[in-house]
Length: 313
Image (cartoon, rainbow, N blue to C red):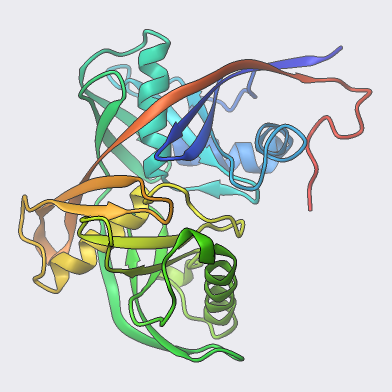
């Protein structure tokens, strides 16, 4: 008998999020981190079926809505993509908020989501505008040198914004939509070199996001190109990447508490970010963006279909 998975598709600044609202696996009643482990170990085929081809694509990010441990929270959520799982996803949280509103689960105002890396606040400011207060973000290293074979030497900051980032300013590349192939190649080779040389986040954590940034030509504070773990680039300005960037700016004394930083994506969409300064050089980032519902559908998992659970590389 075929299984059916009900999803709502949204996009945030051009970056898609496919939200599972019914028909997903039973993951138990633990924390979101514990449920993520169950998802990964026992039900990874659902991740593949939802975001991989033939139903999805490399750029698709998935989210599954779950009952929260704390009944006062709006929902629990686990984010995933074409190659695995994400601790947090900023554009995805904005998309989830708009999907929850579409479902009639929340209305305008402040709500909280449980994620595998902690709780985040979402504020629905209107039908499509959402501000999130992300997990505490911080930089652990500045101007880390890495010599990439066949390219050049780069210096980057290592920072946490819900995922681990290597943020590079002096890269010599043109941040433009017609240069995405080159930007992807450079970023991927930087990531491969970091991994080969054992350069990590805290506790040996893999740095799986590369962010090249520079000036905006459209009046924003800065522009970025973010390469995600599965080698797809982020169409949005990247919520966790913007959080990591804000943490670096604050650490350098270049961003005051409450001052607005407007982060432009490689396709021109914009997030607005501010920080609250915390002890130890850490910040509580707040990211504002827009998301839209662009589809509702039922995915059919036909046992006779050889690619029912997605095409895995």
